[in-house]
Image 1 (spheres, rainbow, N blue to C red):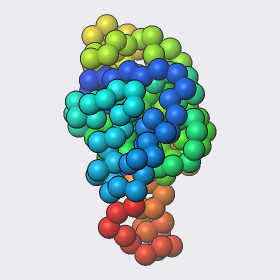
Image 2: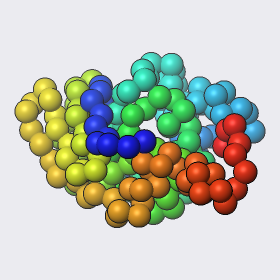
Image 3: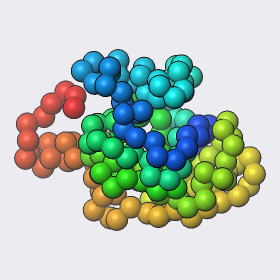
Image 4: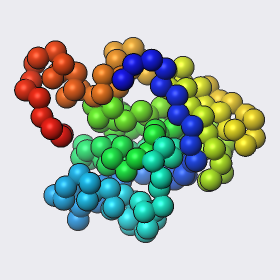
Length: 172
């Protein structure tokens, strides 16, 4: 990935304290990565994964991604979501987002700034988030440059492959 990372899509909204068990539940843990996507938010929003379209944007409340270190960020990316914008991110979950090149930002006020179904535009590198329906904009917290470089490289595995530090794999 290179150049400006800009996303425009319909928003889906979830609340505070979304844990990794809700994103990637135990019953999906040993399925293929593609099969896992069908279980995302199955417990709190049955059928949601089938409604998501490629390029949609997820907006979360406070403490998104709390819980275990399971690769739930990969499931959100594989579902086709363009990015995650949330009030605050659990640090371990943020690192999983970076490792799997799933763009995620903290943006205070974002949860109240959108209604589900509205359209957002996100300039990832500058952390600028716009509600296109309302014509309002918010300033999020940009990722540190080292983490941004990992996301732009396609994630930690792709970067290590590019640098010849690990053998290439077809999937992660």
